[in-house]
Length: 290
Image (cartoon, rainbow, N blue to C red; front, top):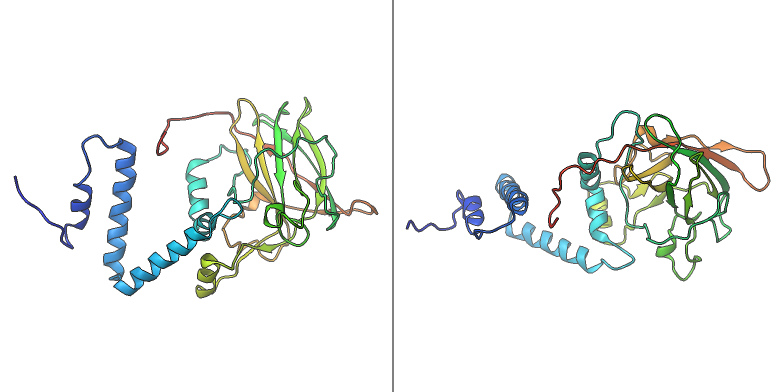
């Protein structure tokens, strides 16, 4: 048996050669590629020990900030463009289907199911907006029984989970179930631009890179329906100054939406957007741990 040892030139082979005989095939593929790219990166930049220590400290502090209310690692993935890339390679939409974008860290399961036309703004702040539209299939037919799960920041740029002692629970959140006409309608507020949490290591990294932390004004949607692919997307406010410099790269041109000013004392704006769902196609299982 030939004895081999770790060397700079054989680093990848040595690490991968330590795997046991019954490793999951997909895990071996992903981990092998990760090790190969990490080692190539370290060799390419000639990573110094002090730089490696800074990186370990950065990752440690990132993990220490994670909680039920905050996911600093998701923010890191977002600002690196990795979240959008993973979304892109996993959700290649057929022509005509609504584009997806990043899920974000502020979705909460179990938002109340509300009646069509209900107001999801519970804190009384912001400019009232009427949101209308339809959920359609690729043939343009309405989708009955679709669930339109919506959430957004308040007028100050914060989600309710960021201010649990200041905002009412479920503020600017709700789920709406479509009928045979596929229509949805609710009242909320015209969203505002806001910075991602930038008081932690990810925010410090953005500052060092000369990047701002702002996201353009948007509303989140999760649209689900039987026999159709789940759609995670946003609609963005046309004319927002951060559309082309979104800190998490989430903007797609097809999702930029006009907000119509209304001559109404109670509702100042209207936003209409139709969601087009792709048919369900689960495809081959390939996720780690599946």
